[in-house]
Length: 254
Image (cartoon, rainbow, N blue to C red; front, side):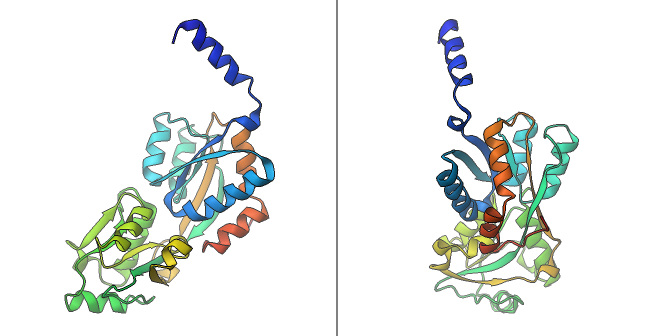
């Protein structure tokens, strides 16, 4: 593009009204169903658009640290947000917006049974019925680290080595659990409650005491504009918080 055309294009973008510019959001994979509902409500009320990328919080944290042009980071692990804030990449340390929960997800027709004590999982390991179990990768996915802690609590982590299928994020772990790549998976409770997954599976909520709290935090990046600020504010309002709660998240005090 010739220099004058590039300049004209940048000028046109700069004078567009704010409601024409979509907030660019990096969001944890466990939020995809809850956030889709929140965004639909927000757009209907305000006419504003929100562009969301879902994935691993750890991957997004690295991308933001390297200058990725996101306006808002909605992480499944508050530590990623706090580290970026300490590096000066965010406006501030943000807000704690939810506490996540884990579930054992079992597809229809699986040889596993879903129970909160994981006794069915233990029995399936012992008698050889379990070949594969899906979890998010503990190296960069908060739900993967929580799944590991829960399995360690149940005394199952060591015996599962060689049987684990690791998803890049918790949504991919759920996909593996439902696709036949595994007999089940330990995933986000919020995903298991979605109609899309509930039709194809059963799930049991794993006790919160079995793993460290999945404290989920969000924050604006330093370059965030008005569109992102408005959406960030909306996420803290009762209507948005009610959607999160309905999708299986515990809510911190506002």
